Length: 263
Ligand SMILES: NC(=O)c1ccc[n+]([C@@H]2O[C@H](COP(=O)([O-])OP(=O)(O)OC[C@H]3O[C@@H](n4cnc5c(N)ncnc54)[C@H](O)[C@@H]3O)[C@@H](O)[C@H]2O)c1
Image (cartoon, rainbow, N blue to C red; front, side, top):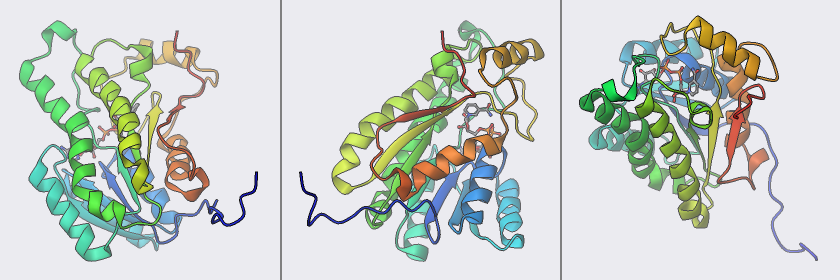
């Protein structure tokens, strides 16, 4: 079969001059995504509900010579998502990459599912699951204006592990993987790719109560690589999925978990 006449796709791995929105970029793994996207030449649009941490990551990137801008965002709120959409559209005219990373995670109180307050369930779902849908919708025109837009939705390996203690979180992240897969079909005609990254347990600068010391040891044993994952371990997969090097990959879930055994 001849491919004469069809344009050769780019396999460039660089994100130079790409406008990339990173939600929850103010701390933890999102901060690492923002820093490395900017280090790769991209323009990091840091969107976070926490203005203090978001602005400090913006300053950190600018001080290192990268390009970054902070914009406040409550991803559960349609009006807030639209405001971010207007901001990026006016400033850049397009969005080349979107990392739907913001979530209620490090602040979760672990408890049996029958003890989760309904209000907490609803609030978490509004941020973790409704958020990626609302923001992708608000950025759609700007994503369509890019020649090679890529969306990376952050799920969690906790879904495939069936981890107990935070049923609303596991359900929300299962929903993110499903949303991604279906969204990839709806956006394929626009040439917009949508993939999922499912991180395994990742230890950031933020203290959290979602892993007890005993659970941590057990999970490290279930990994093929018996070491802790750091935020930087998640970055390569996200940069790859944002770049043209993954230009024919969409609707996929990439587990970045050191070879965690799921069963
Ligand atoms: N750390 C892990 O072990 C791990 C494992 C699997 C998946 N994940 C996922 O990776 C992502 C990042 O994890 P993390 O450990 O850095 O989490 P984190 O809790 O440290 O950071 C979450 C970020 O999201 C922001 N945020 C919360 N609510 C928001 C809202 N309504 N609007 C906008 N921003 C909001 C917070 O301000 C914060 O900056 C999350 O989606 C998490 O579920 C983390």
